[in-house]
Length: 305
View 1 (tube, rainbow, N blue to C red):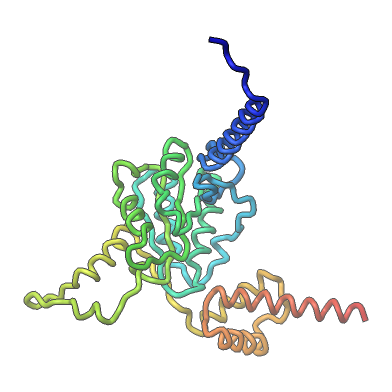
View 2 (view 1 turned 180 degrees about the horizontal axis):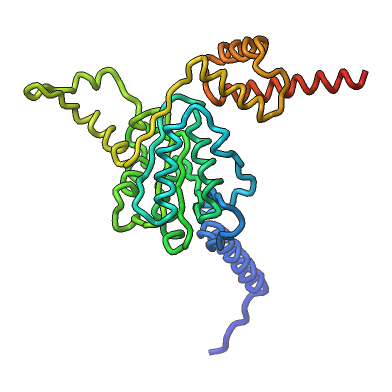
């Protein structure tokens, strides 16, 4: 039996089919995870965990905040506690995960950054992790466990709502599970909430009396269970007026602002704090920047006349 020749349209149809297949393959390749990017460990003393197309990677932070421990005023006890723990860690001794809690603007985050700057020459490094990426903590630990440096996994302004996935992931790492434990990393977290979760009045109704003792209910126990996994709790408190003014003068000196401890400056600083509704180190620093900038602007304008 003789073979019938293919119709003239057949080659065109086959070419179209091949083109469509290549297009589908190209789209599928976009959905596949990208090849891991090799980390440049010498690029910085601080890194940030970032997710792109479902693939996590450590990105160097090239502009690290260069704050000195001496610049932080009014928190001497807190500095002493956290620095001692950090020094233990850097020198290879047992140390604790740290939870820094309390009033906003009192130096919690600045303290962590200042310790990084001080101990970076001795091998301390920092990795900033957003709350939404806490589920990736085991992956981060896997990347650094064989490194010679000592790493602080830093979670800033941390708080959770009920049933958030990062909540359980953080508990696992703090417990030191087989999959996540590593001798060269600790977790330092800052929060305005002591137990990292909102507390409601109705939870007080769950407390029960056992003899003369008061025992919290299951809801409160669950909330406490995360914060108590941090070995070191450090609390920060609002400053009183005298302490606030002292910090203002320290920052004015830092910015080389004129005027000294004049009544005019102190009055302006107190008015600034009143408008902000807070007397804190951050507010003092912001006032000093504003005052230094204003006085320099006036001085330069006067010179041009």
